[in-house]
Image (cartoon, rainbow, N blue to C red; front, top):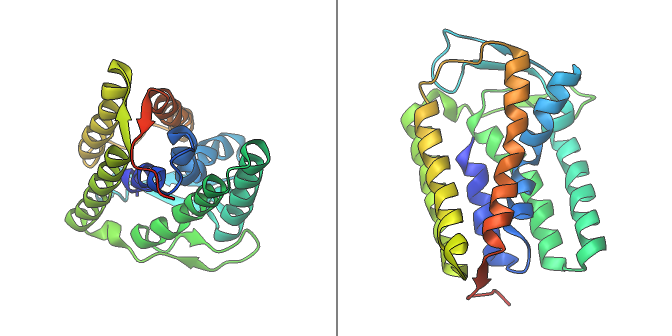
Length: 220
């Protein structure tokens, strides 16, 4: 799951219009933002399968600290708790917590059985949607379109940045998703880790663009 996680963040603006889109995106992306760091630190492990089919060129051998259900609940509580302590905005805190945990749920749907329940157990889940490239792409693109639509119906650009920054982000993500389906695997684990760290730029971009938009249809 890739743009499906972004879909959750975009749609979340409808439920928490006062929250920054940057944080709303960071929530469902958090597991994937932590994973490359933990990979570089040697806390988690992945294998590269160059001959694997699309979506299955990486073998997720161990990632209990970033991707297990138990730890995602911990990260959700920490993220939402800090957010609420700073803002006192309850809808934002609730949506952020749900967003963090949503990552595990969506990954279970797409991954083969490699999603851990907890760091201390061996149980791993995965429904394997990735085995179907058309099914995976259709699911994610529909989700992404719905999320982008809800965001667009909730906010309006106040200036040129507001009108075009988020649209450009949405377009870039969609093009990148389509192009990466048949992309070559990373040359090394180190390159994968450092490349993954650049994912933090997406929430920053979203925060910047969202600051230039006004809420036009807040949910009570």
